[in-house]
Length: 257
Length: 285
Image (cartoon, rainbow over all chains, first blue to last red):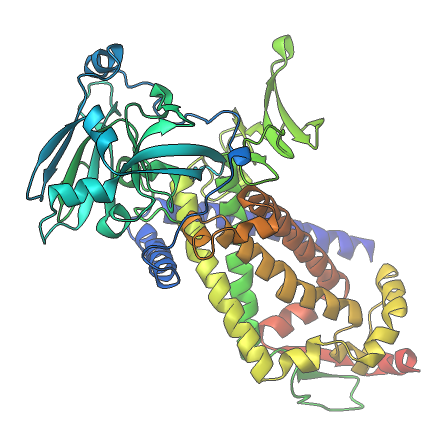
């Protein structure tokens, strides 16, 4: 009786171990295959479609009270762009900074920080959700991207706004951080080019002199150190072609989930 | 548990159709989806192996749970898990564990518990959100089918007799005594309550708390997440609910093993469950 029990137990243990090993090994092969991640990508498309179906174009991200603000706002990713060009800009308080607005616009522009500050602004206390899982709350003030885009006049074929940043993602400075959003998000009332955080000029660690706030999406969409805004019909020809630095590394373009 | 069929009473035992084909299919879809969701979820957790209570992670209060690595000087590194301020050495399992190639590496949950096995957040999210949809669609279809076929009302909803037998059922479970004969064809009351709690409380909760973590879905009705304590609380509830599902699965598998592994396994594959007649007399007496 005990022997059969032991035999059964051994059989079960072996079966479980084998099943576990097969599961892990099988999933590894699938993760590294060409086709399976594309199948998984259907989940992203479905999430995107459903999230847009159940919200309005102007649905607002939650805003918080002063007391909800995090004691310190965490800096993630680049804390200080490691280029001579950026160091020169930072050295004299970004007096020489210009934000280029170009691509599919009727009136390309080049704006100094003072000109950005003169645009219609919005102040909001919002939560920053990192794809890693943590959240932090801060108060942001910035130029409404809608106001800037209206001044530039997007051409009818423009579909996406691409943010080119100052932080190099490769040591040889051939690759810089970039992000992109669609026009729906670009014209959202809470989408701002923030130049203030918690009532003070935006610190270098958090993207000085300006960073994007696109409140219904995860942290990696909130491009820091924005130098140039380009309107495009498609981002397929920019860098890796997926619409952002992290998107080129496998992360979802729709970062609302 | 529809249709008592293929009955040959008096022959000692007979097979009857215990689980309908849709229930069997949806059961195994659940097994696959929940396993992948758990393991890819642990990989996602590993990207920031700490849990908080509140609207944000940085409220001034320490995390309720944190898994990390501690430098023990000459003793080397240790895996450390902090729960409500208490510190536990979890070297080998949490915080510091051996890679597939045997080398020690600092990480939340070990490689064999996660999909993918090595740190790869983007791929873990792809797996997680795909199978979240599988789980959701499967669950909605199950509840619709269960209502339409009266499977839920007939097999899962406890009746008056069930409520009266709670005490006896607890004793029976503790003694590993399982009903035989005709009584084995019905779920017992603890079993019914466990299934109802999982189907109507735990699974909806884990899905809702997953949705609560989506900044886009927060904008459906700004502030709804505060009902659960805020986004970071929702993340913590999501994690706890997931482990409660694991606890359920362990008890479920344990009960299946001790009450007739092959009979139960057959009934969830082919649908046929063997009822033994001779034992039914003593139990029903």
